[in-house]
Image (cartoon, rainbow, N blue to C red):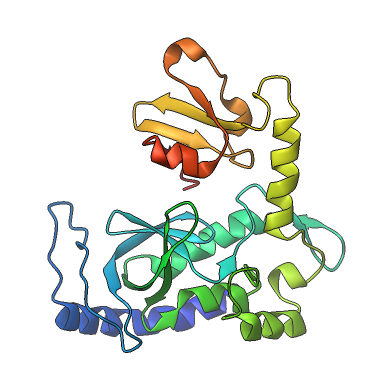
Length: 247
């Protein structure tokens, strides 16, 4: 069912990308990634246009800028759900793959909706005329993030009724999954009290890993190598570190 939905999106992608290029008149960077533009949507919001890649199930890198999909919350990359027969399936990994398919080789337009508490840009993103945020919820690969927005409660109701994706069996809400992982990491012998975020120094720069990161438990915290602990994601961002990419 998921693949069938993607095929519908794909048939409209080429024409939509050509139209977007004509309207937005974007400036190409040397990397062939579209630079940030600032047209205004019919709703009065600035629009970020560019080629995109999925960072995780609900976050994109658009023209080099990190965008958190507003109004939704996808399973974390390592998260497992259960189907109607109580069998586990990798709902987090499937959400990441689907987001990658939805933006692959397409021009993406993100209507900016401010910043979250971690200073990440929030956006309603579209590719080939499709609302990506809505599509993930409708396919049962993300929850409507009602704590902050009720924009996609209708799509969630459709997915529940159809019993697709996370609604086909049982699934832990990602905010509860993250809270559980945070508590476990916080109680470990290694992490300073209340500060379980690991800052790692790599050839790609200074990267922080949250307790639900796929690589979290592989990182050994050696103070002599520039690694450090953080108590919050905001603290890590303000110190100049960036989040680990799942993709």
